[in-house]
Length: 270
Image 1 (cartoon, rainbow, N blue to C red):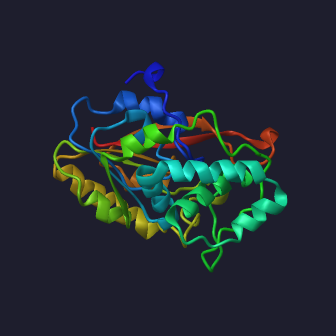
Image 2 (image 1 turned 180 degrees about the vertical axis):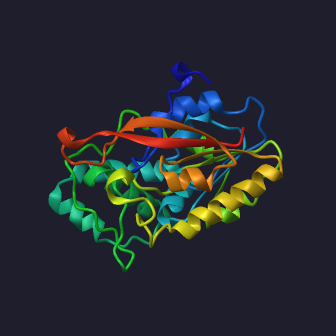
Image 3 (image 1 turned 45 degrees about the vertical axis):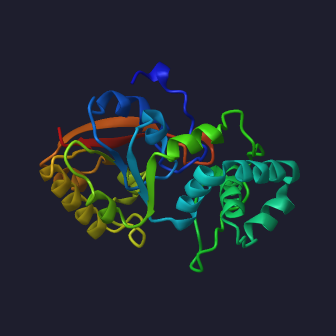
């Protein structure tokens, strides 16, 4: 798929999201594939760019997966709630909504999108009690011109959505499936070290487990494409795969003056 054909904008922002890589992944995607499989869904930038006919999408974050379910099944209700959030948005309202526990799946989905669009840099972070605790950011737009929840709902109707560990999803991959994997990894590995980054949420043991699951998927005939940190430990871990460095601009720094180019690694089975 050519870049000019890609007009699908993800409805979520996501730290480490791959909007910038979507066109390259489209060019690298096998022309004939059975299913598209993505075990670290996030904002789904590559998924929305590819628009696969059949897919398995998963993430370990239950709030994220609930959001996708709600958009798929009740997008009108979510959109109405977002319009209400848009009308009332201010600092006081942000913290009121952030601290509210909604029971309805559609209200929780609208809350998730609202906080994602108005919090600091679209970051998703929870405290030890599982409560979202990111402060308000500088963005005030809640309803976007790029929103097309009806289109998103239609596309998601062809997808199997699962809240689970990545290994469970990858174990479903079989011949002619395409597995795109974008696991958590450090954004500044050259400064703070890769192995220690995010150790509690995604450990080096998880990285090893991920590689093993992908090797098994390849043995079953699946093709896999992985993004990861361009670090010696990762290169060694994936030494049996094809590797090439790619560059992007870091957007995690609050001040644009401190944003810098970051090298990442594109890893593939072919």
